[in-house]
Length: 236
Image (cartoon, rainbow, N blue to C red; front, side, top):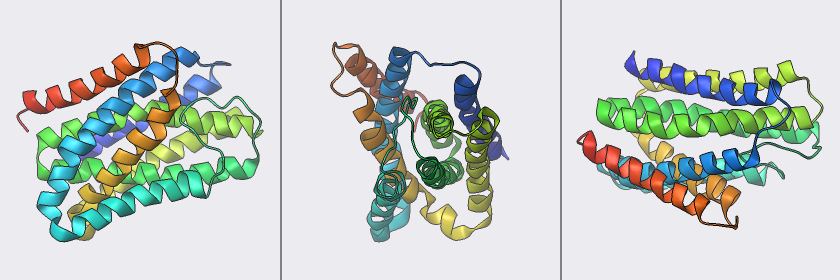
C-alpha cells in the first residue's frame, strides 16, 4: 500500500506537467532547463549509487542483461521509433503519428517507473523513498513533453491532458503488477536501473548541454549531491 500511495503522488506529476501546457500558452524555457538539469543529476546519481548496486546484488549474473534491456527499450521507444522527441515544451508543428508514438514510448517508461517504485520498496523503505524522489522529479517534464507534443500535433488541450493522465495510470499499473507478479518484483530493479540511467543521461542531459553559463552545470551537480546526501542521511 505504501508503494501505491507514493506512485499516486508521482503519477500526479504527469498531470501537473500537462496542466502547465493546457492552462497557459508557454512555459519559461530557462525554468524548465534548470529543472531538467537538477532532475538529470538526481536520476543519474540514484541509478548509479542506488538502483544498480541493489539490482546486481539481488539479481546476480542476469542483472546486467536486464539493465541493458531497460536502457535499450527506452531508446527504442523514444528515439528509434520516434523521430522527434525531447523532454520539454514542443514549439514546432509535428505530425499526429509522432505524438502517438511518443505516447506509446512514454507509457512503457512510466510503467517501469511504477515497477521501480514497487521494487525499491520491496528492498526497504529507504531505497523506495529515494527512487520515488528520482521519479517524481522527471514526472512534470514528462507530462509537459507529451502534452505539448499533442498540442503541437493539432490535438485538443483536453486530449493532451488525457494523454498525460494515461502516463500516470501506467505508473500505477506498474506498481500493481510488480506487487502481483514475482518476475517483475525480482527483476524490476534491474529494468528500472537501465531506464533511469537512460532518462537521466540520454534524455535529460542533452536538453541543457551546450547552454551558455554555469547555472545548468551547477544545478546538475547539486542534483547529484542531494541524491547522494539523501542516501547517506536515510542510512541506505
